[in-house]
Length: 94
Image (cartoon, rainbow, N blue to C red; front, top):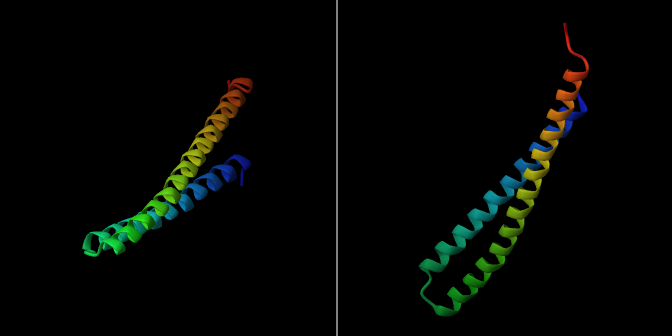
């Protein structure tokens, strides 16, 4: 397998893992929000809201990590395109 292909596959796999993690984070946030919405006692609501805040911090960190990984993937793809174009220019076929 070409090194560039391997790097692209690993980048995309990392993005897939991060997206799966975000899906889990979103499900957790929604469940906590639903629980808080159905809860009538103020003390329980405060606990759930605090938990949502903690989960939201983790969610935002994961979003940031996903953005960084997507940037890396885009950068690698641009580099690969440049290499391919340079090879085409250096070795024209007549």
